[in-house]
Length: 370
Image 1 (spheres, rainbow, N blue to C red):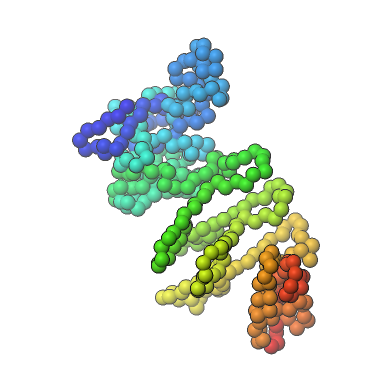
Image 2 (image 1 turned 90 degrees about the vertical axis):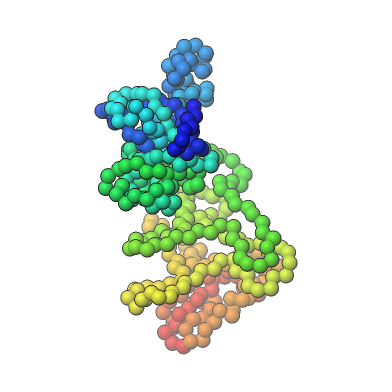
């Protein structure tokens, strides 16, 4: 059902749904309150068992029960992926609902509608991200502790909502954010199989002749005191290995293919840089462009199989020869074996087919003496 009138966003769409109260006591329903579908419902609203066609109050999974499409409840940790919309203005707003009641909600169309939502966080127009929070009747910040899912962007400025929840215009746009987590459980892409699997893919081509080109840009700015403490401020990648892979396994992969043309400048597969300007660095305890860290808690690989760097030469040319040029006679040396004069060594395992330096373990050595 659609309502269009002067003063409302003409893109806004309303839908009648049935609110179910999961709490042990009655709940007061508020205008702008976020609601989520009961995605695992097997309860009918039409009174017909979709499996048998007979009268019945429930329908088993896989028989297209309409309850999943019309039944809603307050956000909880197990339904945040199933945002339905926000409670629209109406005579039932402010009523106490003990069990169930039909209500109207403003839903989100693909182009995003600006509607009134209930929020409990300070908002800035066009900037503040608003998210679902488990067991909450208002939108808030995307909190990690409660698996908060971003679903809207504030369309008004109000600095008082962080102390008292209230109404504010917002654009419903849950599809603008990446959220693939259900009750803290990873979504599954396959039970078994042998094919390669990619969950999210970006594949673009640029024919530009000048300027810069980037398929994906991730940027974050921290203007207060929060740190990352091991997490990446702009990007954090984690892979959890619970089985036995058939080949090598790595949580992050980076590969460059150069197949045509004559590159005229510099090619790097990965680049890390640190830029400091205007900051006071004298009190910083440690500064590094790259930190490599590993932890073995219960068991470790054999000494001959453990290294910080592993270099594999799979081609007919021999780029491993370039390792010989990594040499500074005053401090850092690359050698085929350890030396009693060095303080620290970084092992590098070289695996290759033929030519150049021999396969084996090499070391970056930091010497006490030149």
